Image 1 (cartoon, helix red, strand yellow):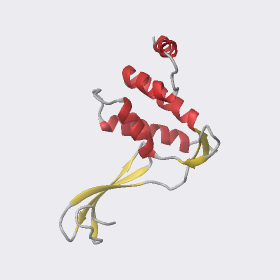
Image 2 (tube, helix red, strand yellow; image 1 turned 90 degrees about the vertical axis):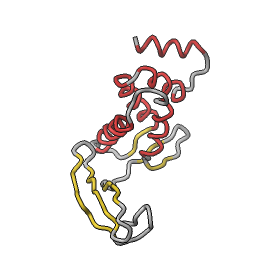
Image 3 (tube, helix red, strand yellow; image 1 turned 45 degrees about the horizontal axis):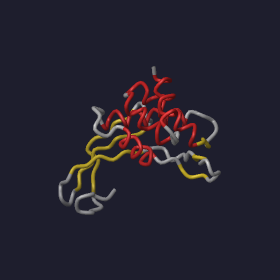
Length: 147
């Protein structure tokens, strides 16, 4: 593992912990060259394919989902750890399935279900982009669903 500060390849593991929710291993590391400490995560590489609305497929990308969630929760009182937990929960549900392909529509619905419990404003923000509201009526219909 390369040090993110100096690029050195000589690092040592200080601490390892199993993350129960994500089935990942969190490792605390220290660079033997510069002494910088950093955290890495090891996850099982069992790719989940996302089928887009145009029929193309691409690998599931946690970072892409995080960007969308960060936009939806901008200026809201939501921790990054809450967003990570939300993504972990979605990924765990996807990995527990026997089928490794999932539609982007289904992932969007999974996000909305969890956002509805976390923050109603973030839910509406995410839904307005995800569902591509064409007019104010669609916006109000979604608000009515939340009530």
